[in-house]
Length: 90
Image 1 (cartoon, helix red, strand yellow):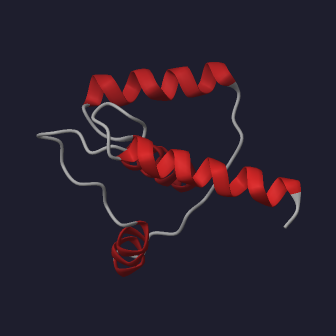
Image 2 (cartoon, helix red, strand yellow):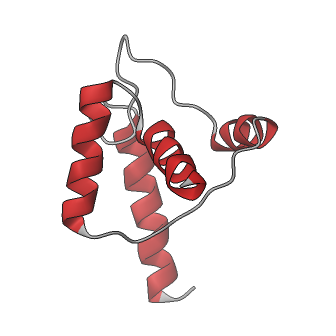
């Protein structure tokens, strides 16, 4: 076994031990909603016709979008979809 393989195995052991402790990274928070299974989330998104679409934007533009989401009380996905639809119509 290589030295790097041993280090990876040790890191996994430590992470597994820490996951059982309250407040540790990956530990369940009492009263919090359970984390969604990523596969199940992707299936739900696919059923809704949603497709992941990553873009790189200027930081100032992202701040404006975040401000609009707070003002309107919607999430970023809804806001960007609305703005794109409006922009594509005109």
